Amino acid sequence: MNEEIIQIVMAFFGSLGFAVLFNVKKGHIVYAALNGLLSCIVYLLAFSYLENVFISSMISSVFAAIYGEILARIRKAPATQFTIIGLIPLVPGASLYYTMIYSVSQNWTKVKYFGQLTVEYALGIAIGISVVWAFANMIRGVGVKKGNISG
Image (cartoon, rainbow, N blue to C red; front, side, top):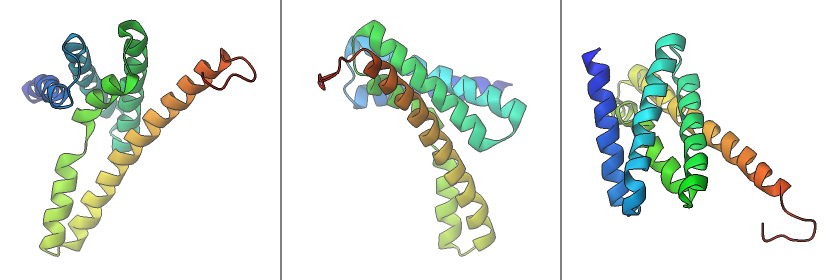
């Protein structure tokens, strides 16, 4: 339990650091970092029940993207700055690192395992945000009048 709490707190501070690095406006930084914290919690909860990296990543990235879209409307800012910052804790850094380490040492069994894990993480994230962004674009498109392509 302590490991999860440390992971959640570090997700917030890691997201906060990236928000500063990406020059997110001061009024939006904490909201963006909060997305990282919450998406980490969603991932940990989903993984504890499902024990599937792909589905857990997808669920948490869907959450991060929905949070980003909602905050974009509330804070009148681009959704990507909230969404991308919220996805930072989900990036499969450790599995990618181990894939590279084992490929250098030519341990192909572990390369296959960690490489597959990395791809599952990445696909889950990509599919999750793509679905939300597609629906958000369709919803925004409903209000556009015929012949007006400016949206």
